[in-house]
Image 1: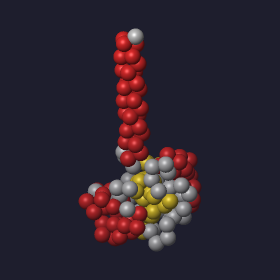
Image 2 (image 1 turned 135 degrees about the vertical axis):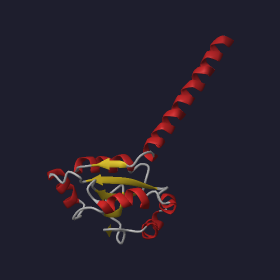
Image 3 (image 1 turned 90 degrees about the vertical axis):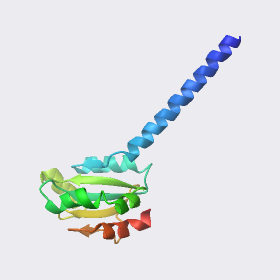
Image 4 (image 1 turned 90 degrees about the horizontal axis):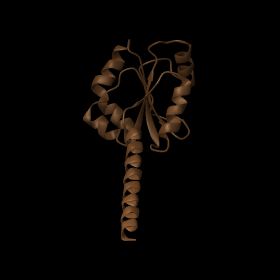
Amino acid sequence: MQRLEEIATRRQILVGALSMAAAGALSADANAAPSLVTNLREYREALVRLSPHYQAALVDIGAEWCAVCKTIDQKILPDPGVQHAMQRIALIKVDVTRMDQKSRELLRYLRADGPPTLFVIQTASGREYSGTRSVGSVTAHDLVRRLRPFE
């Protein structure tokens, strides 16, 4: 009888450990890399995936051929102040490098002319928060100021 109790206890510990590991993996996925999207379907899927974990997301519309976008990626987003402000905000990177029909459809949906464009949305509804849109170059200080209400 004692042997059966030991096996049951080990099984409970194992199931508990696996459940905790799975929960950790799910939250790690949500906090991991930014969501990269290239079309409207992927954008909507990113919102569905992120909304249980984040109330807000920074939408970063960029392209490989955009020099200002490279500055945003290499200097602005990695800035410690921006990183601190982004702790509770998801990042959705919209890549319109191809500028094909699907890219243009997504840009129309987001009401953007092209890169670089940044703005904050509510993940549950996809609604853009007023006063958060930036078109063209942006400083780290300005981006932090726009993100501050969502920290």
